[in-house]
Length: 404
Image (tube, rainbow, N blue to C red; front, side, top):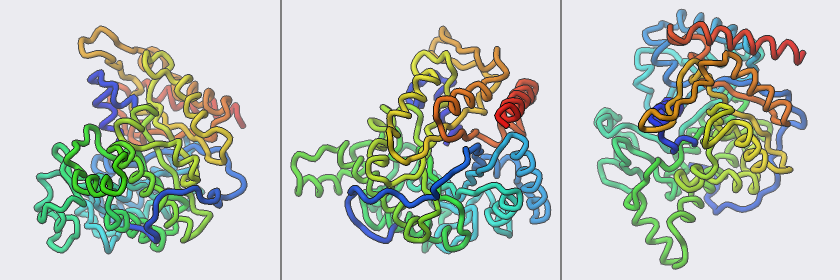
């Protein structure tokens, strides 16, 4: 999810400031049943990118040792929660009977999620299975899907349940069959692994979704409600999908958490992705939010502290926990904020304590935790940023030590 954001930021784009048990419209259910007390969360994302760049070609013994070292590294920066990719592109980073094995781990004849989760648990790190529900394969990859895979059948029959946007296919959450498919994967993860949480990030409707994406099903909905707008139609579909994932999790075990990491710009969430975090809080369909506040204190559009305060307003006086996604991946980088290179933010280069300072802002401001993106940003940085990353880690350790 975040390589996309880095591309947008470096290009100066403001966009990045940015199947279930029951089929029913969103409503206001009782508050989620969650543990009464939580320690402060310090989390880290481990994505398909890390699998691809750090784990390619490993046999089971090598991968097991890698995961043990990885969780040891995580403990060094205070991590107590791991958000581990299990579904990135309607594929599986675990042994699935529903989705095909991800091409990223095609050479692994073992279950990487199971091994990684066991290593994390042994180190007393909670594990949340991270899914991207709607994002599917590149158009060029569709012919490689299994013949009997339902998504390939939808693609080949030009079924509106999966639609092309740009060079990639996306599932259309307006259809009950799509939501049932998504939730069947959630159910599978719950039954196979009993993770501490199910987690999804900011991939909802893709940026720039065309009207043709869901034209037919929207026209059917308008037959029943002539005043229905496309924006409200899509927002309702997102809310329904979120609720059904939540209900699937809670039906399995009320103590397993379900949370979302939306894009940090609230307006873009709502107007571009049709994902309204206010609704999820009001409807009680999330246990936590992790907005991706991937900007520094001096950002001219979305500076860190005011953006954090905006998200506190989303949570309000609800029981939903507010964690903050921190951009470890921009440590040591000059951020180009305009197309003509006239606006450059150098604070990630001039300061080597950005992570610790942002952690202080979050915890002193009443936040419930932080989550680093991503593992490789700390433990496999580029050579040109290595020194400043090492200094950032020292400041994080000092911050945690001061907090006791």
